[in-house]
Length: 184
Image 1: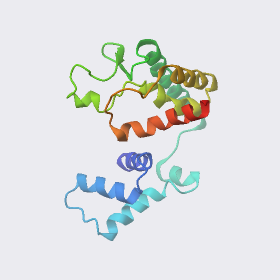
Image 2: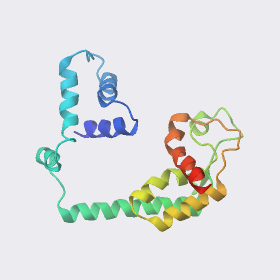
Image 3: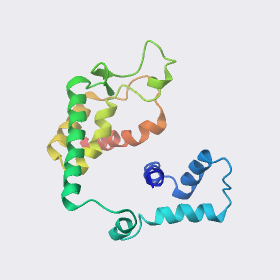
Image 4: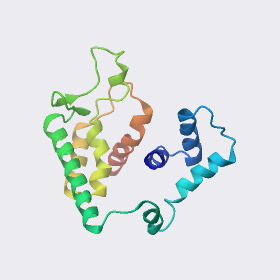
């Protein structure tokens, strides 16, 4: 179940058809998988279909949290997000991300342009702050969302000569485009 849940999340976060994404991932796990096999697609569809059922469908097959446990876990998730977000703002902003080992900000490695582990993802535009916008909105934290938008408008620019990994940046930068367009 854990693998199928993870793959379901990945398939939708990557905006790929779930059959194609799950099938290709399954092949990387088992080289003997036949992609043309009807049974493989049936298995994928069966596992996917539990998420399309009414809320009771998933619960009947796998169980569920009690209302108290669900609220407790929701609060714990909120606290974890706020801890990470506040730490980023305190120790790393306006860099792209917080380096947890040294508790400081990290951006592109200008001294070593061939350091693709860092330079492919970090573009020197407050990546973590942009990435946190949707979570702030989903959590209903409108005051912090507005403050984050102001910080982005005041501090973020794409007028730099950087190469960034497009897959990582495209989802995060859609917020930046929305903010810039909306603020004009």
